[in-house]
Structures are given as C-alpha cells and as structure tokens.
Image 1: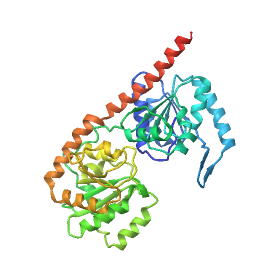
Image 2: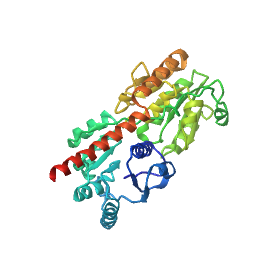
Image 3: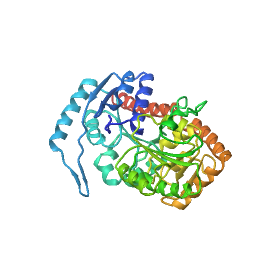
Image 4: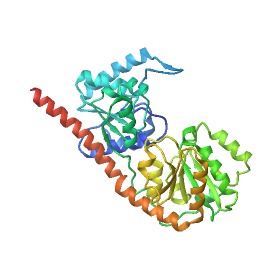
Amino acid sequence: MHWGGSSLRGSERCLIESAKSLSKAGYSVVLMRNDPCLDDEVIPWVREIVPFEFPEFMLDGRYVSLPVVAYARAWRSLSSSIRRFKPAAIYVNGGRPCQLTVPLGRLHGIPVLCHLHHPANRRYLYSWLFPWATAAVFTSEYTKSVSKAQVGVSGAVVYAGVDTTRFQPAAVRDPSLRESLGIASDAIVIGQVGALVPHKRPLLLLDAFARVAADHRQAHLVLVGGGVMEAALRSEVDARGLNERVTITGYVEDTLPFFQHVFDIHALASVEEGLGISVIEGAACCLPSVVTDCTGLREVVEPGVTALLFKPDHVDGLEAHLRRLMSDATFRTALGHAGRQRVERLFSIDAYRQGIERAVSSLIGERTTETLAAR
C-alpha cells in the first residue's frame, strides 16, 4: 500500500526496492497506490498494480478532513481486493494508508506491517491507527524514538539504502553539466539536494554562502529541487546580486549527475529529516557533507570523519564549516572517502532489501505459527 505525490522521492524509492526484494525472495506482490509515478520502475517486480485512493480523516488545528463517503467507498474497494488477492500480509509504505488498512487487516485476520519514513506527532499517529498495526518498521532510530515517545510503538529499524554500483564517484568528471548551468570549471561548488521548503532551510544555506562568497571567488552554490520557496529564493538571490554565483535548478528527475559531476561539497541545512537520503547519496559519491546536528541526520554521518555538523539554524557554524572545506581540498577528499566506506558498511541497497525481507517474512511466519497453534 502506498500513498504519495507525483514524483519519486525517498519513500517511493524505498517502496520500489521493497517490491524488488520481496519479488526476488519468492513473494507475489500486488501494489495498491494513488499515483502512477513509480509504475515504470516497479512493474517488473509486481504481479499487478491497482490504482487506489486513501482518503484520510484528520482534525489538526485548522486542517479538517472528514471524507465519510470517500472512506466508505475505499473500505468496500479494499475489502473486495483483500477477498480477491487473499494476501498473507499487508505492507503499508507510509502512515496515511494505515488508517484504512489496519482495521481491515484486523477484520480479515491479516497482519499489517507499517513502514514509517518520517516522525509524526501523536495526533497523526493515532489518527492513522498506527499503534494498532501488527508491526512497525522505521527508517531511523530517531523516527522510532519519536514513535515510542508519542504512542509507545517500537519496532525494527531498516535504514534506507542506495545502490552503490550506481551512486559512486565518476571515473572522469563530465564538464558539460557545469557548462550548461553556467558554472566555471574551476568553481568549488556547494550543493544541496531537496525540496525548497521551509524545514530544509535553503535560506539559511544561502545566508552562509553569501558570507563565504564575499571572499572566495571560486565559491558557487547549487540548489537542486523545486518547491514553495523557489520563487522567493530566486528573488532573494537577485536582490543580493548573486545571480552569477547561485544556481537554482527547479525539480530534476535524476540527481545523480549533480553528485558526480557538479558538487564538490554537499550540504543539508534541514532541521527535520527521518534519515537524510541525499547525504547518503552524496557520501556514496565520495562527497564531504556539512549537515545539521539534529534528528535522523546524526545517524547518517560520523562527525569529523565523514561530515561536519552544525547546530540547527546556526549560520555561523555552517559558514565556518563551508570555509574550512572550501580551503582544504585534502580534507574534502578524506571526508569523502570515509563517507563512501560508511555507506558501503551501513547503507547499501542490499542491507535495506534484506531488512525489509526479514520484517515481512517474520510477520508471515508469526501468522503461520499462530494459525497452526489454533488448529
């Protein structure tokens, strides 16, 4: 089960890899999803794709959603699909689909595994019926700790992984992408990958970069992504006279070429990450990172060895780390190689697939044991 937006983000990538892992392990996988953006990549690994909407009941401040009719229709539709496919288990990718899937799973005696990629507050977790799922998987120890503190639910941690055969440093850098973006060949490029939204703090990164750029002629900033802050950021760049030093790409389909051929330093100024997949991708490409010392980001890096950390919203700390990396190519290289080794050890795609397969097989095994005991 998956509900998401119209682009392939971290949770969609996780779902694709989960389907691939389970299919290779011999399971027959049926995907029910609201948006077709992941269909092309997941088709080889699923028996069938069923378009499905997951209406959500929610009372959260001014946000009120009470789709009674839509929920009733979805209930009937999912009940029909359960009778048709007779699943041994239901794997829910994200919190929202749990609201419908958890009670139906209990009604039909089917275990439900909920995979939580980002922390959520108590109201959302209870509204999604997350505490009543059969089992839970979390993308980080941080996300698990929030769930445990909010609603008392723990579970397995399965770190999101990257394909290290794809995400790796280029043997030879291709200058054409830099040229197409108007970036000088001798520039030292600081890059952030992620939606241009408030919690990613792109304006904080711009503030720190503006200070560095004042006396580092080679400094260039690239923000890869689009979002609600894009227009405001472009205006801010223009107002500061940094149009020749800052590139905002908007949404791109594939971020890998930026890690391999454009960036020299990866930054993530976010204050809220379930894990921080872009940091893992950058490290896999032997890039040093500067990241916020908070949330799931602490689990991705080894401070001073693979990355430099700064306190949330502390522009002085961010600036100091950028200056250090800008001026020391040897240190950049050392952090980058150590980061690659850490990814291979902890965040490989094989480790992720094995973790998901263990979680699902354990759930199905427990159900089989209970069924035999009942007989």
